[in-house]
Image (cartoon, rainbow, N blue to C red):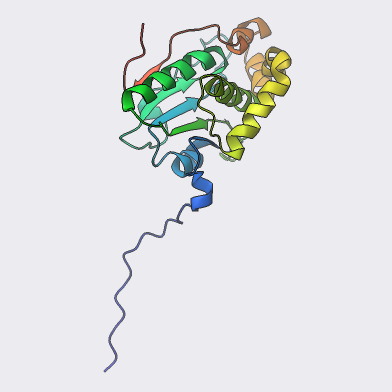
Length: 210
């Protein structure tokens, strides 16, 4: 007698390749929701980078900073903070303090939001790449430097273009979207001023030190 096959209840979701998880590295970097799924599963700290959120209508105020609910699903145990060009050093100091609190190496995943195409796909956003690289560079400055190739490449992009960051921010596709929506280059430029802010926005985890 032939037994009938039992329908499989296994998930049809494709498994994340261990290589894509960058799990052997302390500092990882990837893009958007799929990238967060890949690199953040065992992270102690997730740094979300979105330098220029989608442009608002002419005359409307800039989009507010995202809330935790607006981000892709992230591991419950991870602290989640926002990072950018203006807070790179402050973020690195926060991560170092959290690593000291943990009493061990903190695993850090930097996730760039990127832009969105008309089809809904994730679009490479140079401003997010540069900001992620600035954070990787600042982390190296406090001794947290075991970076994946992806994180190292973002860092190299930032260090190589450090002097042009303000121009690249306004000249980028995202920057030009904001100009077309009615914002001026002078409105956008402050977002490219490296380390101009000392406060870190913490969406989940230990409050930033005053």
